[in-house]
Image (cartoon, rainbow, N blue to C red; front, top):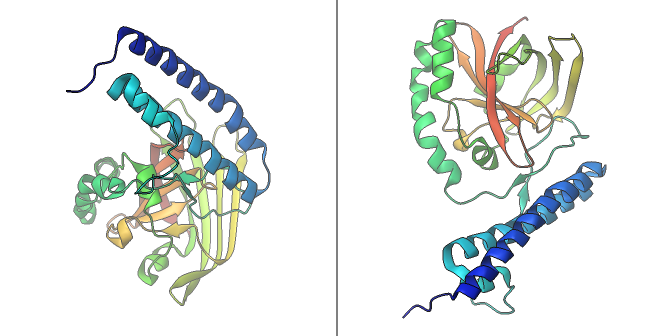
Length: 289
C-alpha cells in the first residue's frame, strides 16, 4: 500500500513550495544580474553553469512536491551520498559567436530527443521551397517551417557548413528583418562574406551589421576572421536551411535560398530570456555583388 500524506505533511509541502518559488525569484533577481556584470567569458560560463544547476535543483524539488507530496519532496531536494547510477548534471553548450565580446547566456545542455522531435513537422515542409516565387509564397513557406523549439535545435546544431552552402552566402548582401510585431521598427541587415572551404571548414572574413530603421543607428557590428564559426546547419545537415548567428548569440537566422526569387529568405529568432528564444520576424536578403 502506498503511504498517504497527512494534512500536516501537505501543509509543509505548500510552505516548501512557497519557499522554492521565493528562491527562484531571488535567483532571477540576483544571480542573473551578477552574470551580466561579469566581463571575462570563462567566468561567465562558470556562472551560467552555477545558475543552471540551481534552476535544475529547484525544478526537481517543485516536481517532487506537485507529483508526490511530502515524501517525494524529501527525495527531490536531498543530495544522495551514494548511487548505482549517476544523476543528471546540467551543463552548458555555447554556440559560436561572431564577436569575442559576446554578452549572452550560454545555451543549456540538450535534453535527449528534444531537437529530433521538433524537426518532424518543420523539416518536412521544406520541400515546398522550390515552389516559392513571390513575397506571399515566401511568407507562407517561412511560416510552415518556423521552429517552435529553436533553443533545442540550436543545442543540436552543427557549426560547420558544406562548400555548396557556403558559396550561397559569399558576397555582399543587404536586406531587412521585418518583425511580426508591426509596432516594432524593422532592422536593416547587411553582410559581406569572403573566403573558401579549407579542410572542411569555411575560412575568410565575415562582417554583419544591424541597423534600426527608426533612428538609422547601427547597433550591432560583428566581425569574424579566420575560421568562420557563425554559420552552420540544423539536424546534422538534413535540413536545407543554413543557420546564421547574426547577433552575438542573441539573434539567429534560419536561412534558405529561394532560387525562383534569387534571394535569401529566413525566419529570425531573438533571445527572450537566459535560455529561451522565439521567432520574432522574417528576413529577406538580396546579393549586391
